[in-house]
Amino acid sequence: MLQRHLIGTPAKIGVGANRIAIAACFFGRYGYLDSRSRKECFDRLHTDLNVEMRSNTDKIGAVILDDGLQHWRLHRDLEILMVNGMMPWGNGQLLPLGPLREPLSALSRADVAVIHNAEMVPSRELKDIELMIREVKKNLPIFLTKLAPSYFFEVKNYCSKLPLTVVSHMAVFCVSAIGFASAFVQEIEKMGPLYVDRLGFSDHHWFQYKDIVMMKQRLRKLQDEFGAMPIVVVTEKDYDRDPLILRLMDPYKVLVLCCQLQIVPSGGHTEKCFNKLLKQFMEVNFS
Image (cartoon, helix red, strand yellow):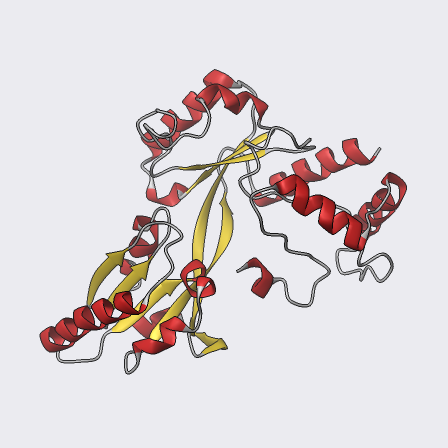
């Protein structure tokens, strides 16, 4: 998904469980900027955000890790912890008894905390999550975020852009294989569909032909019930896992929901404040 969004940029995408091996491979292939070059790039970018960095475009100046908090062997200059506001700590137990990879005391290593799906969580519960975080690290900056739906595109044409109103007054079949599908389904429900059915698979599941057969059976039932062709909606993660197999859903239309992460202003913590904080961290590390 990142690779599709970052086409045409100097960004490189590395995939693999061994983050150190991947990083070493990329550094060897592309090289990396020394501290002086990084500072020059940083200064130019913050002087003019539209500047094109034509020199050293292949060299790596920053590394962003997904799920990187638990990789202790890697030094991090900045650690951003994201918490799912709709299910922050689960049962509080570590794997395999619960969802946590580390005890809550590991919050002390974070430089910034982000509570995601904030718009779907009652304010009282958000306060409880913030209190839990501050019990571990009192002055940790906490930001609230949400995924804001932008548009749909068709599986057969990822360059297409359809408005969110395309599902209005339609029977919709939400299919997903992500870690927390409830937020995805709730966003679709806000768009005014006639009816929403859902089918969830385990996180990272690769759709098989037998899954397509099962989906079509469900779709035919919806079609009989509502007297019209239902629309299938999937997430970008599901699409990018295997774009081709979803084309087997013919004659049913399959749409992919595209969203943008947005910071929800709260207690003076805005997107501008977040960018300023990142700039401060970068200035410290580049000085």
